[in-house]
Amino acid sequence: MSKDKYSELYMPSSRKDDVLFVLKVPPPFGGGEIEHQIIYDKLKNDHAFLLYSRKSHTKAKQGRVLMSNFVYGLLLILRVWGTCIIRRPRVVFIWLPKDYAAFVRTMMLIAGLRLFRIKVIGDLHGMGFSFLQRRSRKWYYKRFINLFTTIRVLSPRIGERICDSGFRHKIVSIENGIVVPNFPKNKKVSFQQPIRLLYLGAISEPKGFFRVLQLVRDLSRANVRFMLYVVGEWVSGQFRHEAFDYISEHRLSSYIQFLGVKLNDEKWRILWHSHLLLHFTSWDGQPLTIIEAMAAGVPAISTPVGAIPDMIEHNVDGFLIDRVDQSIHIIIELLANRLDYEAISSSARDKFERRFTVDRYIADITKIVTMEKNATGHSVSKNR
Image (cartoon, rainbow, N blue to C red; front, side, top):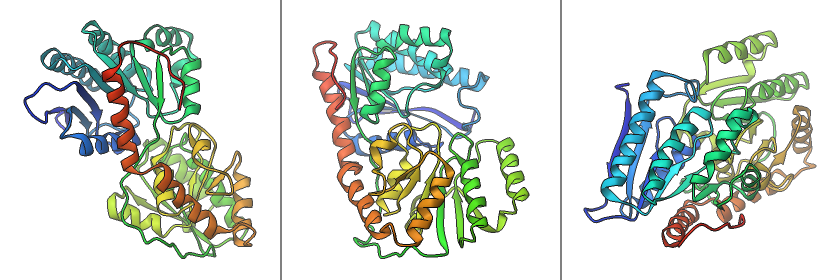
């Protein structure tokens, strides 16, 4: 527990502030944590912040009934309650957990805030709640989700799912935004062998890593010259063991380089020199990895889950697939110049500039907290 920084309070001045941001920041370096760090960096002089980070926390520990998670949750509730009693903000902006144990904890916290008539914006980084398949948990969700006055989602598609699940108040769709280096305006790269494929993010089965290995196997059998670069950390030792068994069984080790976690300039350098990003996930929101790839002019081949179909236009700025064999077809078409790689790469960068810049993201976050602060009561709004 000593490794975890449970909370730090930042106030721009001694004045009373109408908005309190309660944010998770890195580590760990998940998409939600990275986006919250951006909010803090850009708005720290304008609002009050409670920041939480957990250096020792991993995906494997997320949502599990552990003493460390219990202590973390208890301290979170007490600290937020105490801060709100003293500061009396009108609005609290807080992350909305997707796993059940953390969701229950957050609902207890929000119930206390509502007693003080504090409006609460929930920030949902994901495509929904995985625990809703169980009837008892779905009942709890429907009973308490409307404690939030507003929920921020990643796309209208996800907003519709939340409405259908029983949420009756405001839903606002705000796309993620990221800080990027100053890339050259024109990326002159031809799609030719050896192809540089990239997997970026948590290495797990739900994120589609086994399907990526199947693609590696099939490309090797098709005598395509390529290399897969894997950037990220393993979610569990067991999955790592299973993946390496598969690699050994199919003799794939010469086609794969595991680079570990890379941040900042190292990560961007790898992205810039890649041809394609592989993102075969089965459960996701609006992946920062795809946004980062777009910024670097790297088209993504991805499964159409969460907000991804709203991000990628097939064969225009990336590719959407349902099966691994479709990826092979795309790569063969690119190699044969029947698909214009340079045009697709350029379109991906253009889409980033239109939709996923950090300035647009921060402007939209500022708008939602201002809207909630000035609202006179509950109302239902359509996804934008």
